Length: 428
Image (cartoon, rainbow, N blue to C red):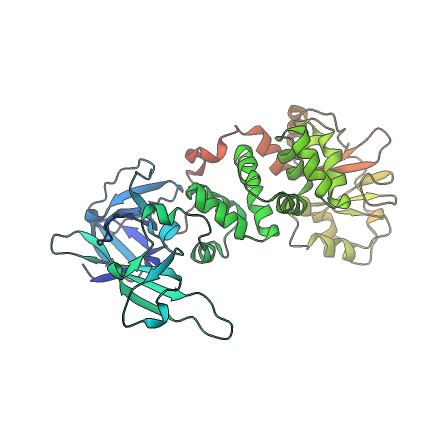
């Protein structure tokens, strides 16, 4: 082994190679067998994420070297069976790190009788080639005006790390949140689904409303409902306010009517009103698929102003691909719908020109009761990624985007079907 002591937090994200240098995946966690007698726990193996995002178990005895930046195995043949945590096993990063403990070290009197927090675990290989957790890196809870010092102590000097104690609610999530920084919401949702139930809820509670809303939108419907049920009711309403109205409507549509109404009543009326309008439509119709907040402009808007609007980083690429032009008012349902302008046309026009002079009035808009199948054919026929929805009086109600069409066309469990990730480039 290239290392005699390894800290598990530094393993996260390391590339895993076979004996011939072929890339297998990346380390995502370490599987530890916690004992009740406070003796040093054994390391069972590594949780490795393949490029397809499937997480598998690699026994620690298959590891021949742990070096800076890479873990090398003694075989390129590994079981591709999805990792399932067994009774008695704990995940070092997902479950043990951030736990609250007591330290009994005579050399650290400041930590006596106060709660400390686990920030890392040190593992070492024994003469029998087993790996065991021998050290625990801890810090005291934050004190105003003082830096938090990290201390490394022996495992035997720490209490509070039995499975029952680790499973108590209220555990910190600092390390997990650091792993999520910079990731897309869809990737955070995938990682969240891999966590044990307790940790999933603790992480969700710790995320701010905007981030949690983005992540919730990437979860399957049943998991959205389950997660929302673990939030305090006022917080659940705040998260719904931060969600896109069409996604909030889809989620509320999965709840009993009385629960949905209670949450709508807690939401800001300006946020709840478009959601209520969406709930009036079938979820598999243009009205149920649409978002009520596309880019809407008046004919007097300049091309420069239109381009500034579509540069909004909060817009999805599909919504940013087209602007819709109406008579005032511009809030949905708008005044009379006049037509649309694709972003490619905006890029070809002088900045001072008005969008009213470059309208595409020939694209027939959708009616809200048009079923999903017809919406799909509409997008395919006109090569669109975004299309307008109007009522019988030609008021713009919103726009359907291709991502919402795909989400409703795919089977309910499409996020669980790993073959859909085959061919997607990894991050190796």
